Image 1 (cartoon, rainbow, N blue to C red):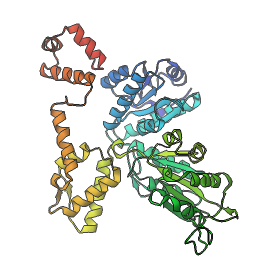
Image 2 (spheres, one colour; image 1 turned 180 degrees about the vertical axis):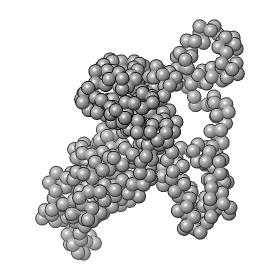
Image 3 (cartoon, rainbow, N blue to C red; image 1 turned 45 degrees about the vertical axis):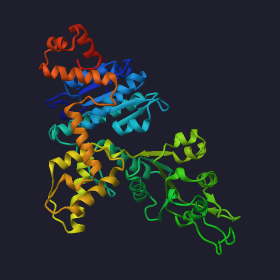
Image 4 (tube, helix red, strand yellow; image 1 turned 60 degrees about the vertical axis):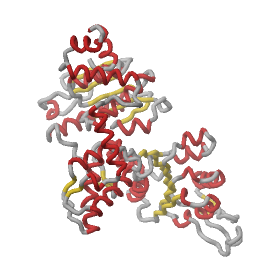
Length: 465
């Protein structure tokens, strides 16, 4: 049996755990391993039931077994997205298959922990125990405070759960001398993650060579990476070392790895397999004591299916995978980063910006940030540079951001808009009608021209009961 400490056992509020699964296997396991005196355990077979239970009372831990129909999977992702955006204090654990229909990378942007099937009973119990201990520790500091975490890690800022997961993955990768693949959208900071892995590894005192392969002409990538011998091609007047030789004893970071040609992919695969390479035009093997970290904003699995990227190279690179979440997937990330960038650019431009206007915050939070952290940094830099007063006002923001906020405000005022599905329109219209009748379902049904029974069916269908 898994027991909590005496201190934890006597906390004023018993930790609550909710399990969403069809089989009841996880529920039975937790009942067996955890004493009923220590945790309150609820279960539901459907996501709609989970939403209802979460609305009726908070849970410390939510466990979702994602082996479900496509509809359930979609609703499950919607629920995780809602919890994340609301900065929920619920610890999220997702159980899935390695080759399941839901992308593991996407799940990891929501969940604190993602467990693979077949489940190890000891592992899931240990994860739940760890989650409960963490939640109880947080409760000691007050239910509305964040779990204490470092805000800065090797030049990166992040207090959200997705970023804490990234920091943990960096430490895990750094402890082993293996290849690492970093994925994420443009501007998320994949280069900072690669640098952090190097700085925390045993190679930290060796060279760190960063190469943006996407910015190089394809015909020159091989020469840049592996060097060339004199006379190897027209213009090669002397023997030149490549980036791999420069990185000997350290780390090489290959950004935009999907851009390299088939021929270079073969050479890179050889480096990973044999730890040797040859310069262009050379006949002698050269030792490559180099750790390879690669990054891409492209879906390499899709590139493999399209025969644009070698499958064997993909698996060699993905020995250890770190996914960097987009800015819109990091709760509180916009405020944290903006509050960091304002004083930073104050110092550079000798400004005296002391505050960000409430309306400006609304604009920043409404925008989806396709350029991620890099785009936010550029926007704050421009706003501080242009500021004439001590407050950042909306007029200092680019038009695209202000326009998005205006559209968002209009949708909040009237939530039905073009592009919504009929189901979504029906749900919003029912909510609007209930609002106008102050929740009176009899009046709402009459207003909608349907029976009360039909209204209850629709409320159940849309998860509003």
